[in-house]
Image 1: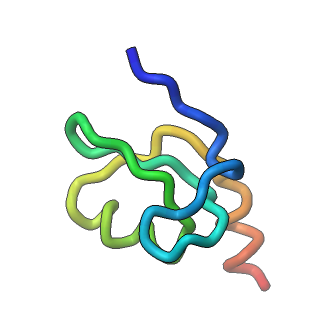
Image 2: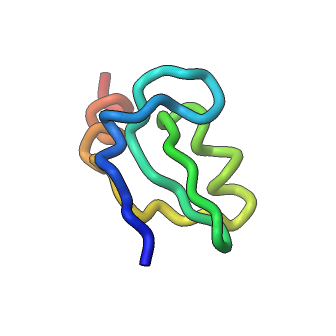
Amino acid sequence: MRVIHPPERRPCYQCGERSNVVVARGHEMWYSCWDCSAALLEHGGLIVAGDLSARRRRRQS
């Protein structure tokens, strides 16, 4: 079993900003902001934790 920490307390794996989601692909997990998560999701990653409403708010702005 894996422990998934709240994403807002972890930096993004790529840019270092505050992460919004946790993306899992295979046996690996990444804490990611929305901007950097696209590459992981395009290659078969799945969002396993995070604030999905933050994405909607960002798109509406």
